[in-house]
Image 1 (tube, rainbow, N blue to C red):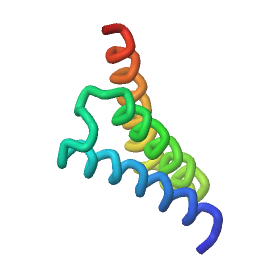
Image 2: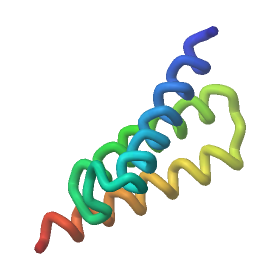
Image 3: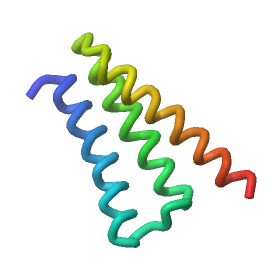
Length: 78
């Protein structure tokens, strides 16, 4: 595995772990941890996609990161 593979695998792993934790109610859907895990995972996956110049996933993961940041901010304002 090279650098971009490792970064991408960590990013996707964190995102999937957040989803798994959410689906099985280990963390709340509107909880800060869920959004933080999504921000970290999506940002790492976005970075890995940028390293290999795969723009569809740069856009997807970049958008996922921004939406997760918005969710975290919304949660913080409660």
